[in-house]
Image (cartoon, rainbow, N blue to C red; front, side):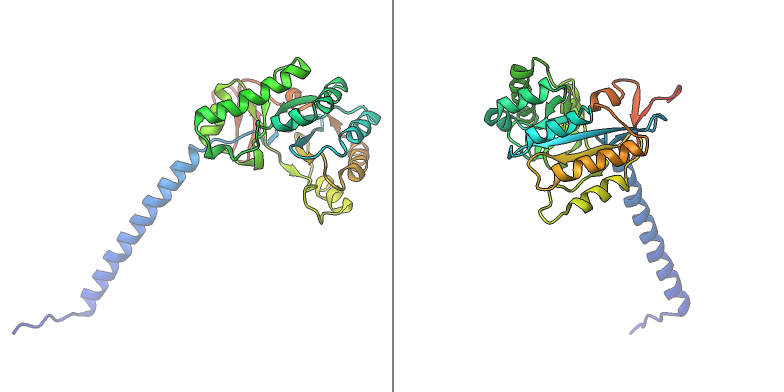
Length: 257
């Protein structure tokens, strides 16, 4: 009978081979992950600092309508125009509010027709969501929306490509006021926005949020005191010759890029 004698050298060689195989495997998966992430598309979260301390205020309207007129009055007091992203079903319920917003000089854009998780839909279904909402908004304002904000902030490469193919820009945000949280106080909303805002920021608010009407004037006055000015998102973003970096910041495309 023959016996296999395992020496320390055999063990060392075996461990070296196992370690080498593990390193190679991890490297392959790391490379694959890097390659996948490099192909990931992003919406516009904010715009690069253009040196003018510009900020865009945006509001999502999907459910209630308790304070829309109040928001219009607050923004009007400070002569500020904002970007409102509305759901088609909200337009159906409150067409008079859509008209009020538009007549006050605010821009009305697309937040889908029925507020679904867009990446779960087919391209045809996504396109229908975009078109149906656009048609409802256009029928009231006479203007076709060019901006889209995905419900729940939920997006995928396919969704972003579909929006682009429909001649629209997908807009996210870099500052979330968190006014949608029931337990979020006015002070928390104010500090969350004012402590983090920067030139080129897109701030997310909601209509029908409990403490937004109280927080909004405080935020506006603080930002004005710090030298910020307010702009519509459609005016702030680049429409062509731009790139979007890994953080979602839109930048002017440099020569040679």
